[in-house]
Amino acid sequence: MIIYVKKNTDQKQLDTLINWLESRGVEVHALSNGKSIILGLIGDTQNVDADLVNNLDCVSRVVKVKEPYKSSNRKFHPDDTVIDVCGVKIGGGNFTAIAGPCSVESTEQICAVAKAVKESGASILRGGAFKPRTSPYSFQGLRSKGIELLLEAKRLTGMPIVSEIMDIGSLPVFEHVDIIQVGARNMQNFELLKELGRTNKVILLKRGLANTLNEFLMSAEYIMSSGNQNVILCERGIRTFETATRNTLDISAIPLLKKMSHLPVIADPSHASGIASLVRPLALAAVSAGADGIMVEVHNDPEHALCDGPQSIRPDEFSSLMQDMLKVRNILYPQK
Image 1 (cartoon, one colour):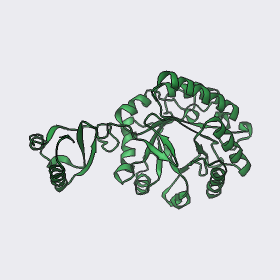
Image 2: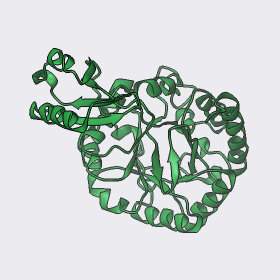
Image 3: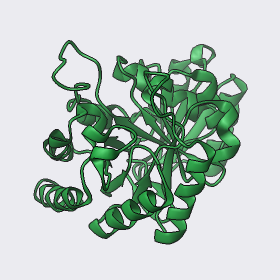
Image 4: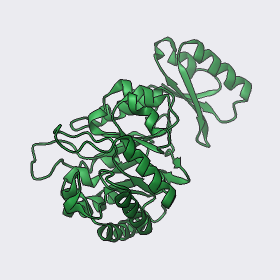
């Protein structure tokens, strides 16, 4: 339920209304859009009489929200959420490029890639340390050592870092990681999501392999309802009948998510296609659709990469892509 309170309502009236609502067993989030004060009610609103509230002098209207997701719902939060990561702003008209290798392999590799992508305009460095692999015989990542190497690259370049977490037990290792990524396979690991909701870390949440947008936002809701509002949504392709690509990038999800939610939305064309030559057109399509950012896999020697070399582009290709993405964005979204 959303309650629109008249702008000229005094603080005493507002406090009385909020206290009464909370006494009915709901959580109240208050914000202002300049025209009125918006009270977003989260929880079981059956004990709140909508007609009674609507007839109060200080209330302009009451809207019942049908969607099961509340905290992530744009109806509760009309303005775009802007997340600040070490001075890098994500969302709200800011375009952010996240780049780096699929897996951290060595000091030389991660530092070389970090320097190259930063020079080309990337703001955040990605790198996998704990790797979820379909085959138990594939490279599983350097684990805690990989996090150490990422932090070394951060000290060298000053770039914030993002890496994927696999389970709750690994959380202490991510103490100095700026953005914790929840991969597609863990999108509905609700215990992990609740635990991440109790942290103050920025969470990059990837859409599951075969999940609807409602399910995607409900996973974000698990994090946000536990107290952490710093969530970034990532469309990374879904599983369809098509086998020519690794997954199918759902371009329509980008504008839909931005309409449904106030959270930043980025796209991952690398995992969506699994093919390096498709990264550029898919990235440009995502930018055209209004994505707040792109996450791309960049490797300085893809042929010898320990993980996902076929979908990784080279630093010079990333540099060219950055220029093209900014051109497209400047044409389609000049105000941003």
